[in-house]
Length: 107
Image (cartoon, rainbow, N blue to C red; front, side):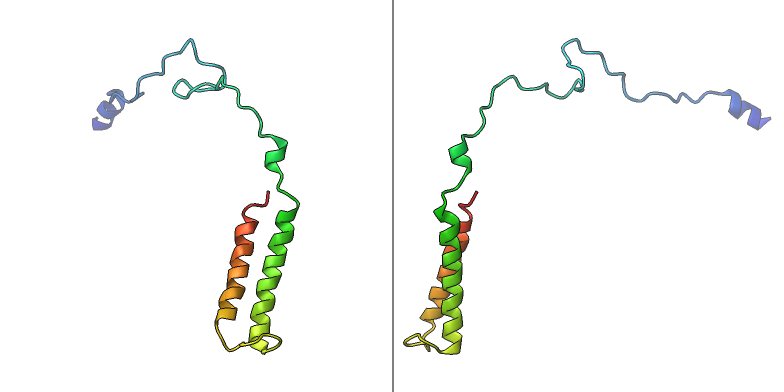
């Protein structure tokens, strides 16, 4: 008998949040809360601005190669006067860093 009472009594389930009202100014494909498509014109970037100069990758590779060559010659003790100085290592690392900075300009 207790089961019959429980099944016949409604507990009040259903929708918790209110229904979304239909907006008249909403565009198809967008929800009522999101902004619509922008009507402002954004011009494309000029072609000259999107391409880097021809010298950028050349300088980048020369700086990488020069830095690696200086560090290699420092450790092998060839052709570098005063190779026991750590300034050669710093110069080689500086060339590599300059190559990395140049690489950021490549588009």
